[in-house]
Length: 160
Image (cartoon, rainbow, N blue to C red; front, side):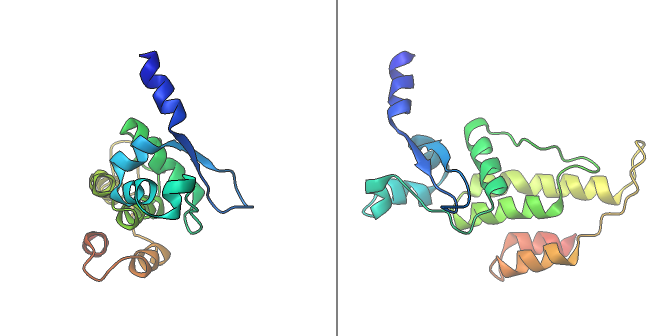
C-alpha cells in the first residue's frame, strides 16, 4: 500500500556508527522500536535522540550492527552456519548486541545457531568436516568481558 510506504519513508532515519569513521546506518524507527525497547525509549522518549532521531553507536562493530538490522527487517541472518561458515565470535557478538540493546528475540535466535555450530564443528560429518571445534580463547575472553556473570551466553560457552 503506497500510503504505508510513504509513512515508512517519512519515518526513515539515520543511525550513525562511529562518526567520522563510517557511513550512517539507515533504519526505520518502527523496525528498531519493534525489535528493541532500548531503541523505543531512545527514539520516542525524553532523550535527545527522540528529538534528533540520531543515535551514535560508538562501540558497535559495523558488520555486527548491519547483521542485526538485516535480521530485524527479515527475521533471517545473512550468514550460514556450516563448516567454515560464520565464526563463534560473530555469533557471540550478535548475542551480546542483543543483550546490550534489550533484544531477547535476537539472543534467542542465536542460541540454536551456537548449538548448530557446535554440532558441525565437533562431530565430523559425511561432508568431510574435521570436527576441530574448540572455541578460541579470544572468543571466550570477549564473552566474559562483555557479559554479566549470570549470562546464559557464558553458560553456553562454558558448556561447549
